[in-house]
Image 1: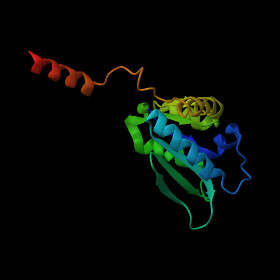
Image 2: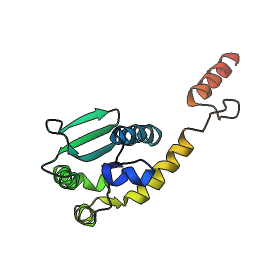
Image 3: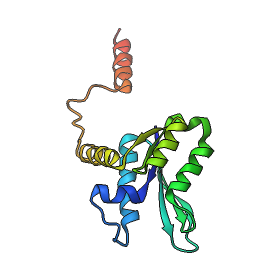
Image 4: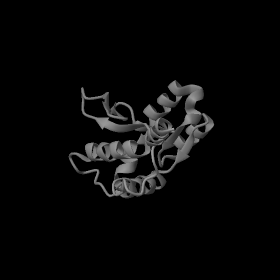
Length: 156
């Protein structure tokens, strides 16, 4: 499942400040870690881009859309849903705006409020980064199993 996220809705829900000069980059950094851990794709939308700065930029698995001040993140998410078309069923829209949620549902996308996604994001980041693999207790990989079988065959 991929995500379409209203970034400015989400920022305060994860304890960041909208007043911070790098709030958007801080969120993008967290979303990159989320994507790496969950192996999922995210498109995040930020409205009120400075004049001449409205564009999309790729940050690993995170695509950030900086929306012109003449539009809004809500509008951009709606347009993106229109572009996705029938594939909307493979996407989850993260927004606390009820109109955006309603439009997403009508197009077949799943919906999560910013609060719900914030909980999942923080839980994923808390669990994903702290798990260390202990190679002594890990089950053998397919390669290990094949090597064992081939070695056994040579003895026969």
